[in-house]
Image (cartoon, rainbow, N blue to C red; front, side, top):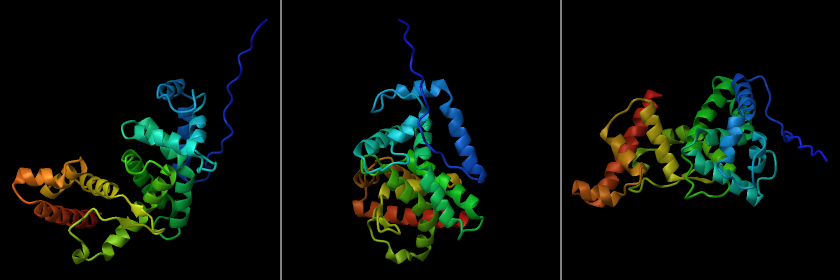
Length: 256
């Protein structure tokens, strides 16, 4: 008897469509990646939950694309991807595609109130989303991955700078790791805030002692370690940190 090998069929998944050039580019890029056998070979070496992947869209479905993301297995699958995204661009690209529909929705809302309309809003959103995906704090936020990324992206793209302009220097406490509250009263992780400050400063070519201090803290060095090396008390390093963040914020806003 001759055995017929079953045909691998593409999952039923609807990708975004529209006239925006960058949206079309992303969807076209996804179609190209999906058709590359080496992409599937690479992903199947990751040993993701749920067994082998036969089409790239299966990765999105398992990560909760277009379905109820309250399912625990979807969140766990997306968590596995975002952990890898810190050092793997393909994983980061998959996570970006996973949250693309809500990012487009944000651009649609914000496009009515920002210069440049939808396209300008979406460009800003994509840049922020990519940073947040690559720097996602997996140790602190192991659940609700998609909603965290979407909410943080909107905050950093459209809310953070407006709020910083309203902050008086005197309002800063000695503990600069305080939480920043977004529009829906959820908190933004301090290490995400520090990562964004570092990114803004480096992108604008700022090279200074304050940036070096913030980068050391962002890489995991503690206040106590830096204080011991400098021969000062921890409170002094806290003061340095507070002044460094204020200075970097002012310099990056002026250069924007």
